[in-house]
Length: 136
Image (tube, rainbow, N blue to C red; front, side, top):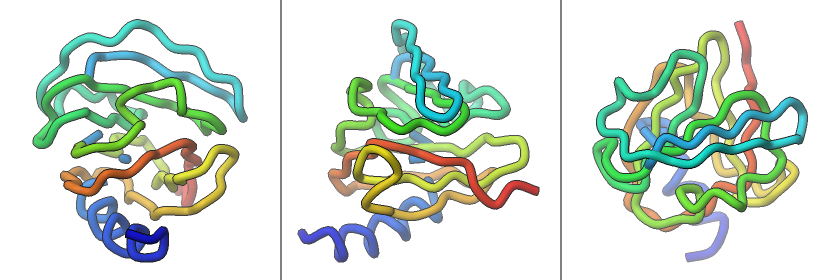
């Protein structure tokens, strides 16, 4: 599947999802690029996603390893949950939608997940960066 077809297909998944009912409870926190992480823990259900975070699970329906991210992240490549496969995600952000990208440094735009949206994707897709947008 080429990147255009993937964007179209995944964009629908992200819009109904997300990147992001998207795993062990690892934490990635970044402020304009720097990322720190902690070890993950098995977390089930969208309610495991704290307010103000984008959470992505390695399995469908918010099961498996969860990775949560806050702030903008230029490089998510070291987090296995963002590496692809079937996943679910939840944008539990406080004020913003979240744009997700297949490339580091906000390149190869995939789509934007509205604040409060959650869902599943059956498409293999890497999410390598995210940026909070449309803040209100």
